[in-house]
Length: 213
Image (cartoon, rainbow, N blue to C red; front, side):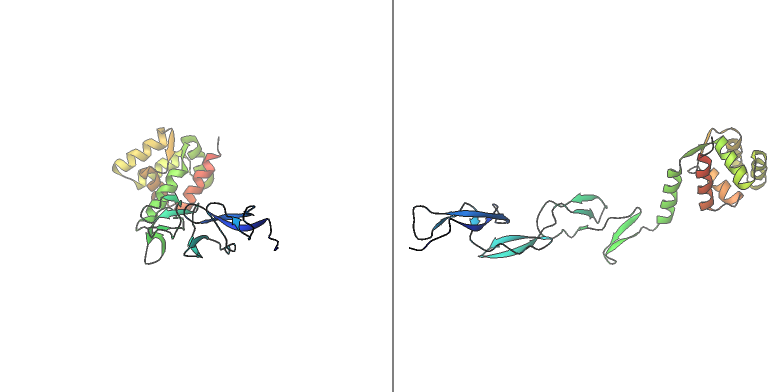
């Protein structure tokens, strides 16, 4: 009488016949011809080959490999919104795995995120907002240390270079304002145009000013 192993390896599937893992089937103790008690949702087959980014599915008596992006972060091409893939199969055509940078939009032609038309302007505005506020004392101290211009000299330059409401706003700010931000167009224009300071140098002055008591 032939001896049969007490168990054999079998492949376990889920309800959709996707491979879950390996388990065992027990030899039928009643039938003596090598019959095994195959558990539900299990099949006798070699373990499927492992392929990164795919999951094996038993279909028509063989293994088929389905793309598996579950858990991956993707971004909607229309809005840049981040989402997580939860379904099996190919990625939807309206998403990409490339994260967008600020002030970009998706280009199908380029196959990547590209700058929007006014990206430079938007980036500058964003940088101004993130620079935050400094006090008048901090500004005047930093301006005198970095530019060699004290309060009186700043007012003289304003009187000479500016006019109308622009002059009034800058003059009053230098004399009385409690805080300054680079979002204020009058202050920005005064430093970059009347004082002829580059944007990079002005941002550096702003950061230095924050260190002043």
